Image 1 (cartoon, rainbow, N blue to C red):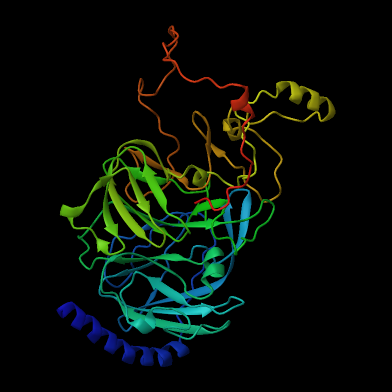
Image 2: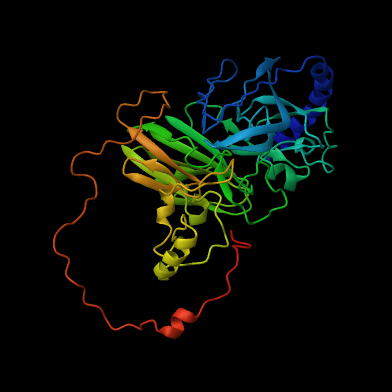
Length: 457
């Protein structure tokens, strides 16, 4: 009860604060800092205000602020941006301050923040602070809790941060268009006590999906389910930063999901415990061990583990979410013997290739002509060959000699001798099999009509 009273007392104070801001803010906007690089920027060590342990935003950055009479002031600019999704492909998106997603906002429990939002989009917008406990009039739902921010206008949001945790921000105006165009960002509220929930490395990224046709650059904003680019911080593998750690580090990974479906985020190697949900930190007695945590639509999750040396894959476990722009109308040719047909076609079309009769792994190493500004479906090469991945995939790279505070890619892991899977070269006797139904001519002739992946999630 006392917490409720405190909250509404604070809300009342904010009404006065907002009036004061409108006079002060109009006279002196804080600088709007821009960043367009897709490379992860060093964590922003707080130069003033309450101390905290900063997060590392994969392929992103944190927004600087200024202190104004004890209030932490940020300036977001909503605007069109160009985002390199991976080397070889750039997308025309909408974002904040030069990037999509926008910069991570970091503050501390108890901080009073004042966030100026300038709209440089061709249509109105508003910003919702997803998961943040705040006065209703600061919740950023255009038409419901505030007027829309018209193009060229600047609005001010001001509130006190009452609870630490992992949060997001995104438009609540023409959501279908603006979120499909990449408008989103993370909002991290650190605990007031810098020792609480302390870890050695704290990574954060946002899940988003886009539908960009091969050869195009602008997402199809009317698409609701059939996306072809599954991204972390608007990047796809091999463009996603590795999560670089030192052996023995306590590591936290924070994930927010602003796609239209759930994502089971799976990490190889160390088991982890889920330590944070939408509602804040999970008490130690209630944490549960996992190797995969499902992040549903609109949810945030934080999990932690102790780093073990190696290159550990981390990815969404929906297999088509680890692909880039994939064709959905490809017939299944597995087991179909079309060698004779292929030889006859090759006499007419010399470059004709047989594909798919043994699976699609060969796509991982095949170099095919692609439309401009298009990424291969499967790509990336590791120390042992093609990785045959795309989309929501990265690597947790843990080494003994990573310097504290360094996030530089250390290259591929050097496995101790005798610790890599190897080929068995001895005799392989024919297995004894139980009787089983055998395919016949009728089985091979039965085939359902082909179609796309309409509605797949």
